[in-house]
Amino acid sequence: MLTLKLITENAQEVIDRLAKKHFDAKEIIEQVIDTDSKRKTSQQVLDKNLSELNRLSKSIGQWMKEGNSGAAEAARREVAAMKEGNKQLEAGMKAAEKKLTELLCQIPNLPSEHVPAGKHAEDNVIEKTGGTFPELPENALPHWDLAKKYDLIDFELGVKIAGAGFPVYKQQGARLQRALINFFLDNARDAGYIEIQPPYLVNADSGYGTGNLPDKEGQMYYCHSDELYLIPTAEVPVTNIYRDVILEEKDLPVKNTAYSACFRREAGSYGKDVRGLNRLHQFDKVEIVRIDKPGHSYESLQEMVCYVQSLVEKLELPWRILRLCGGDMSFTSALTFDFEVYSAAQQRWLEVSSVSNFESYQANRLKCRYRSDDKKIQLCHTLNGSALALPRIVAALLENNQVPEGIRIPKALVPYTGFELIA
Image 1 (cartoon, rainbow, N blue to C red):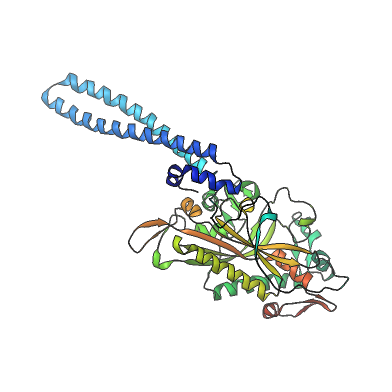
Image 2 (image 1 turned 180 degrees about the vertical axis):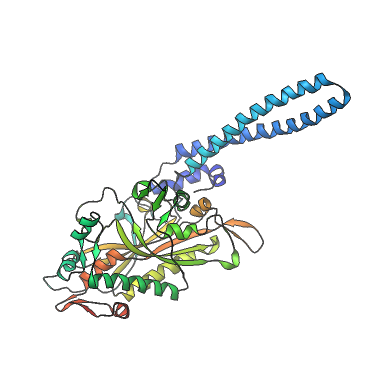
């Protein structure tokens, strides 16, 4: 979340910058400032009362020594009344602090100056494109038909077992999934990322730490009896490793990677854009996470973008990078680059990765800090990216590599699949 200092000292700038995300912050910023002012006033009164209590307590002892029991008793009554008043002040301050936190959690992150103006996905800026568009045979099939033809993925069986959005991978389809996971993890380790195997369930503190709560509470599966959430991405547990941690500057940037299953309710999703693997409730993904110092985080972001580009190039997929406009960005991001690959049979672009810098927004929630070389304690910057999400990668690989003999496997993946062709 944004720091209280930033909001109170730069209120109009915060309001103006959040307008780029099409978030009208005027009313809530006024509430934050008003609540903070009341909290500060109560604190000043409490501090004054505590000083007076200390003086009176010393006076009572002195008056008792002097035999002035009347003055001592009057002071005791005044002390008792002040203590009762202090209880009310402390209760009011706690309520104000709670309200402040609730308000701050409702305010999105400020967009970077590099975020383009715009409200919808159509306003995103195409930064870069690459790869070769395949020439498919006339009878080319979409991936859901290919999955059925070659017995790779059973969508109907998934509906039977769990419901729509929970496919069952079979035979070479299952092996392709496992191959991609290992391929992505091996590449991440080669790029200097330390592998983590995180839990698939997190508590509410973890959800709040990364900004998934309360913003995306309706999209997360919740286990009521245990008060735990199924993770929407490995970003949540991996980033929370550094909650309430002070890192040393010499150890930055921290670079982690993790494979996990991901669970998203995706409420309201429907239509042709969700057919097959295009949108699922459970899917596999390899994530990369960085914790960095502010002066280096945008260099890290560029390194992460280049790294994800190398993955789609190795998979021989046509790709493009989008710089997201203010209206299409996430609640927590300061700057996001989306990767899309072209799905030839569907004749559309499919998002397969988002790479984002959250600056200090998550770190402030997490209390993730670092000790600089001059011993100052400062907030870190956090970054993460999909590297990569499997479903749409699989969809594009199946569709783009159709040949008369079957489905060709990209060369980089063959050592992982153990086969060159799905037939």
